[in-house]
Image 1 (cartoon, rainbow, N blue to C red):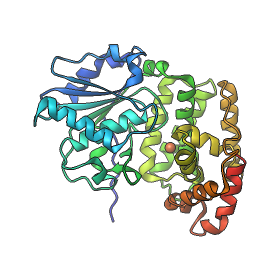
Image 2: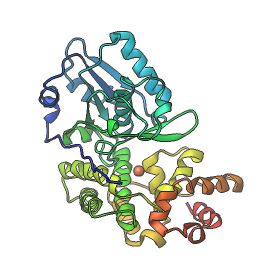
Image 3: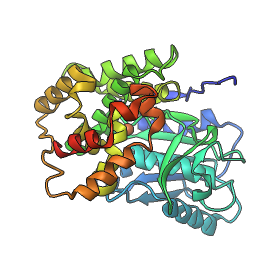
Amino acid sequence: MMKITKLVSNIVLGRGCIRELKAFAGELLPDRSGYDVFIVDSVHRNTGTWDQLTPDSGDLMMAVDVSAHEPKTEQVDELCGRIREEKGDALPRVVIGIGGGSAMDTAKAVSVMLTNPGSSADYQGWDRVKEKAVPKIAVPTLAGTGAEASRTAVLSGPVRKLGINSEQSMFNGVLMDPDLLESADPEQAFYTGMDGFIHAVEALNGSAINAMGRPFAEKSKEAIQRFFSGEGSAEELMVGSYLGGASIANSSVGVCHALSYGVSFYLGYRHGIANAIVFQRLEEFYGRDVEALRAMALRNGIELPQDVTAGVSSATLDKMAEMAYLLERDLISAMGEDYRRILPPERIVDLYRRM
Ligand SMILES: [Fe+2]
């Protein structure tokens, strides 16, 4: 079947451009009126970013707490309920997501659920959204997830953690202000960057990548690596994150993301750090890039977690290994159809024991 690659094609980039956010929305959506919804990671109440926003009277400012877990379907449903309570059937002009991957994904999901009936849990999966979403803008304050450019809104639901994956869950515009990165916790900024680095490494080493995905992934990897090696600028890093997100539709992740799933689910590590924990032990798959990640950690004063599986039972390790096979498409991209023979459960458990 014909495959259409969609990109978020409206981008504002530059230091201080957060001040142009309202003007950007106006340029993008000249035919829409009404109130705006700001969905902001609640950490920004204390970073100064919240105070830089300039809502008009009638706009809704909503803080979302994503510190303990990634966004949940019930959180999205609750936000939509609050918007409807305040505004009845009137739709917003635009939904603006301000924060890292979790806040941006929440904004994507809210924009979809304001025009689609039922619970956001009904839309987890591929192309399940029927009605056109409310327009949305991303304002990333962390760089690396690529959420600002990808069509996935990752959500934990009652039965599964799975993205709403639809054309309707893509942003209409991205505003990249490198000054906003400075508000981030340095560890979180590092691990978010490494998520992007690992995406690019896995994409470039997988068979699923095509000629459209490759240049995006190459440039993304280069920009992220340069930044965390002390060479690149924060602007380049933000563009690298965007390019990484743009590569996702034409590539796939690999062994690290597959194995990190169980580390997050059973041991409670967030996505970026779980990936770094796993990646350190994947020399046989990603050789020199593992060395590069270690060097970046060292340079940035980050101590990568060790011995995280000490004390974890064999039964749990077995379940974690089984979970890795859920990312079948990615394992096929990394190792071919024969992936279960190349990476049997006992070998995954062995890798887990060394983490
Ligand atoms: Fe990731």
